[in-house]
Length: 153
Image (cartoon, rainbow, N blue to C red; front, side, top):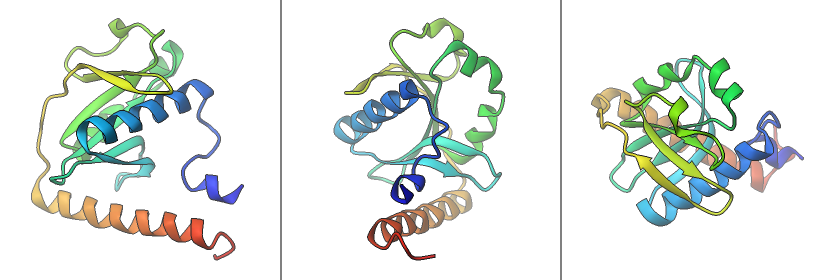
């Protein structure tokens, strides 16, 4: 299905998709954030979830569905230059102990989520924020267009 290819590339496990769903619901309901899934950043890294808050706050959340998923991923450090807060999100059954203590941590399932450890706020420079917001606006418009006209381009 072409419509789903704009938000998922079929590499996500069923567990990761459940965490993503609950996480995005939580951010929308509890924090008034709207979220993008699978966003490619200017450094060519692709983050799992990027939330935009009502005052332009940018949070990146990296979903880890298993211990192995966490162990093989060393690129998460590269996301921190593109957000005001960085979090890991995990399913209930994955131990919190594996995650770095200095990073934010969220637990989620398919229905909702909870912040276990708040992330440190490190505000983006104005130029980076403007570039991010412009790119997100364009990405959102492209995704809506692809849904409205899946046979285009």
